Length: 250
Image 1 (cartoon, rainbow, N blue to C red):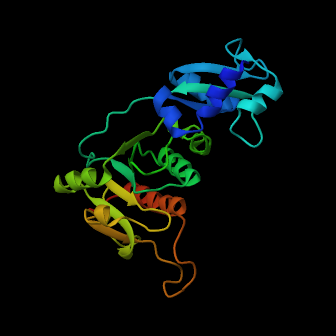
Image 2 (cartoon, helix red, strand yellow):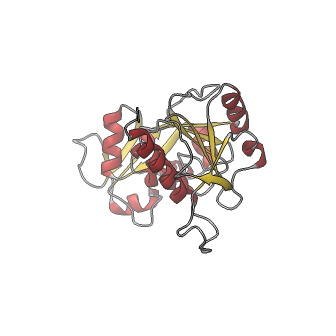
């Protein structure tokens, strides 16, 4: 590999370089295999062994160490063209979506995208100060879910305002909310998850129409101050999908 190739790939750890080039890094033969099968455009593919039937440029383990973003390098690395998803003006009231308000930790972002994929949530709306879904750490944490979930970066406050005005339920997890296990839940709507340290911002909170609380057990217990945002998202999504699967009473 040339020095300029190595330098370019390493530069994709930075969001500015990803935005400018339109490329992101994916590592590991399983993830790259999913990307190739998905139809996403792979710009360059490198491997230390012939995993892809001659499609990869063979490089040495030492070269892979130099270009890998991981502490323990995988056997394969690809640079991939970022897809473009057109964000709607309002969320679809008939579908369940997640909205991430300044979720900045890459591990949380990746886990939430993976959760969305597991629970059949196709759209995740993110404030522009949320972690980039094509950050190498996020891509790895999604375990391929980023291929199947549309992640949109936009003015989240405006989207929530328009959606709420159109009658779409906007749910938010707050300490003053109603118990999620007894509150009525709709099959569609937007679930807003807030920042790791500060929760939902005042601007977004102003458009939350239904406040929910994940209660501790027992309800009177005083333990941890709050749940990790990815853990909370898992609990909330599971309850929404459980409720939607319940037979309707006549």
